[in-house]
Structures are given as C-alpha cells and as structure tokens.
Length: 153
Image (cartoon, rainbow, N blue to C red; front, side):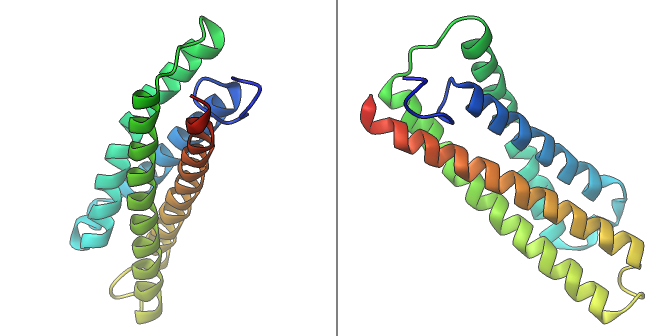
C-alpha cells in the first residue's frame, strides 16, 4: 500500500509532509507571538488559535507516521483514515482562512501608515501569514494523498 500512494498516511512522504507542516505552523506561531501587539486585531488572534490547533494535530500524525515508517507499518482502517482526512481538510481550510485574513490585514496596516503598525512589526505579521500559507499547502496536499488512498482500503 505504501508503494501505491507516496504521500499517504504511513509512508515516508507523509512523514515529510507532516514534519514540514509542523515546522511551518510553529514558525507562523513564533513570528506572530514575538510581539504581544497582535491581540489588538481579531484576525491575528484567529491565526494564533488555528496554529495552536494545527500544531498538536500535526505532531500526533508525525509520531504516527514515524512509528509506521521506522518501527512497524500500521494497519490503516477506513474509518480512521476518514477521520484523518476530515481533520486535515477542516484544519487546512481554517489555516488558509487565517493566513489570507492575516496577510490582508497586515498589508492594509502597512498601507495605512506607521501609526497603526510599524514596518518591522507588519513585515513579521506578513511572514507569519506566509508560514501559515505553506502549512496550509502541506496539510491540504496530505489530505488529498490520503483521499486518494481511501478507495483502496
């Protein structure tokens, strides 16, 4: 089954996708939380909340993939894989929404002027949105690979 779909759950491709997703989510959260001024804007709080949900989800799936790749291949059941796909899709669309809203608000604040958001701070918010967008891309691609595997079970 591992040879059929390279990025599906339990493969080394899935481990790489999950590890990248975890790294980008942590980076997004780190860049956003380096300064406590993000509490002033709801969209920035939304990004922090979503990344706070994505990180544990990704870590658990990284551990499952690492166990499957390095120790013993896990027997995937259709119901478990469906739950992983649904969780991935929900969190990926939430992270896309958070990344887009954060990027647009940070860009708007840069256009308004330095009185609302200093350039250094807004560029950090934009970098956080970019990391969240990369996390979304990896999460969505992982859910598509798992969706591709679902009919084979």
